[in-house]
Length: 102
Image: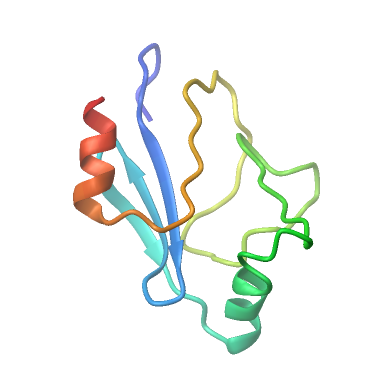
């Protein structure tokens, strides 16, 4: 990531396309669950308002292993977050690129 400037970062998840990471509107990494258990862990009870879901912005808690993918590594976060949005659907590449231009 560039330092001393803002970057648009987006992460999407869908059961079809898996996890995708975008920086400034460009896809930089992706991964799909390699087992049904991994897919279930992410999609279980999605849309059920009575089941809490963790959303961690920045970095995971110390020692936590919430991200099942080895392709998108967790690490320490140092910086600021601004204009955080959560969508109820996985945006496509064109939608992410449009959001990055805002």
